[in-house]
Each structure stands twice: as C-alpha cells, then as structure tokens.
Image (cartoon, rainbow, N blue to C red):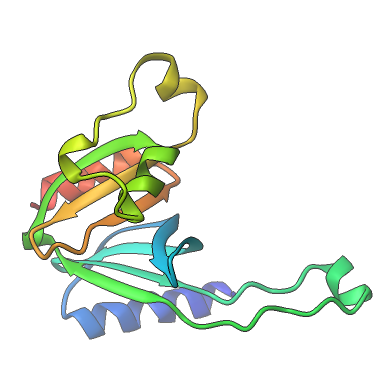
Length: 153
C-alpha cells in the first residue's frame, strides 16, 4: 500500500467508528473455524472506544506463481469489540490458547506464562470480554498494546 492509501484507510476507519485512532499495530489473530484453530494476520486498531481487527488477502509468493501453485480462496475476516466490554488479559502459552479456543479447557484453567516458558515458548495474548467473545492475539508489541488499552479503559 502506498502511504496515501494507508492514510485514507485509517481516515475512513475514524469516520466509520466516529472518533480518533488511538493505536494501531500488526497482529496475528486466532479463532476457530470448522472445528480447527485458524491464524490470520492483519491490522489491530483502537479507534474511538472500539477494538477493531481486519485481515488482508495474502499475495502469492514468487515461487508459487512461477510453478502455478493454487492460491487458497480468500474470505475477509473482520471483527470488533467495544472497549467497555473488555474485562481482562492474560499472556498464555500458545498450546494453552489453542486448547482454550477449542473448548478443551475452561477459562478458570488458564494461567499466565511464567519463568523460562515465558521466554522460550510461543505465547498468545487472550483478551476476555463481557460479551463472551474472547480474542486470542499475537501483537507485535503486546506490552504497548495492553498499556494503551488499559489507559483507554
């Protein structure tokens, strides 16, 4: 995207959600589709009092184009939550986040990554909402994202 396109995109989001853009970052977003945990990547924003995620279609890499590999069909994924429904957050091991998404463990069984596990393993950020539609993310800078979210709460 050209810089003008990026600026226009965020201006349109501000108009859509009726307020200023407070934060934006790239993130991976995890959810369950057809019984499997799916990962998609895109833009995570805090606009006005709304958390908003939108993915973008991935382009085929050069090798795939060269050898005629099939590209997967793309279905746009967007979701949003009101900041006022945000309850808590927790950084957990990736395997625990996947089990949580799949319904294999109850929210009360979640525990934060700690010690060497925190440093050496993949971790995911779980955002709990009163709506019951919790999010599992892997933002580029989870500490800054949480700091901004807490400040706007």
